[in-house]
Amino acid sequence: MPRSSRRGAPISAEVEVLGLTPHALWLSVGGRELMLDFRHFPWFADASIADVGDVHLLHGAHLHWPRLDVDLHLDGIEHPERYPLVARSGGRRPLRARRSRAR
Image 1: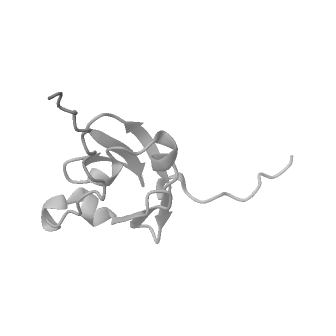
Image 2: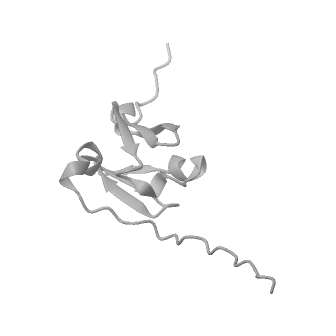
């Protein structure tokens, strides 16, 4: 009887995107389901599925999204109240075209 190959990394050590809604990003990390509400995590509000799907778990407690240039520690996701400083998105409001007035 042939032997099985060596086991890979445990699934619980991986990160998986469960969903992207108009209000939040849902992740599974180490068997835990996490919700990143856009009020606390505004960097994901305008992100594409490809952008949020390119996520890496580093050192077992740090998430990195290279396409978005976002780095978050799991403690900051689980307890956002401990980290009250939130960066504002870099986008500016679009300028409205001025209407020419007929005189």
